[in-house]
Image (cartoon, rainbow, N blue to C red; front, side):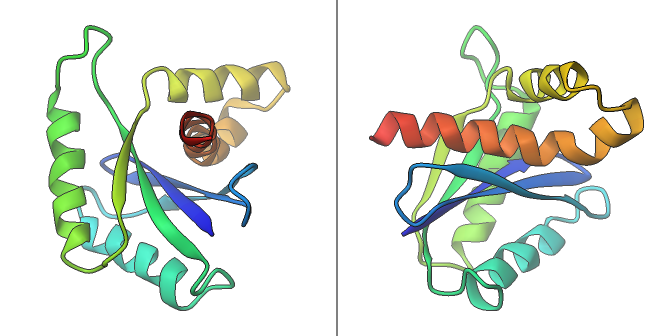
Length: 142
């Protein structure tokens, strides 16, 4: 079964998905939504689960967990925890947290080294960050 990963921000959410064997992670999209309107993100997750080509193929939701380098929580950490609770009211799949420290910086660096313009990096970085988070999760559970 596949894992769907989210890198949640206040206005964008990067999505990534694993292959059916849980070996390869692929970035799906950068989803833009109205600031702090997480209902739109939940609707997008439900779309992936129920109406997309991945219908009935996803068994776990992986959420990037933004903790500080000293492992303390920030306001973004609490935001993700609140989102997970709200999402859990709409789905029965397990929702797991995966440390996302450095994922966005690493995604930005990868895209910069690949020669992407600043504008193009902005459209790709969140889905690549979700892909990196999902790769870390898949390594951790294998």
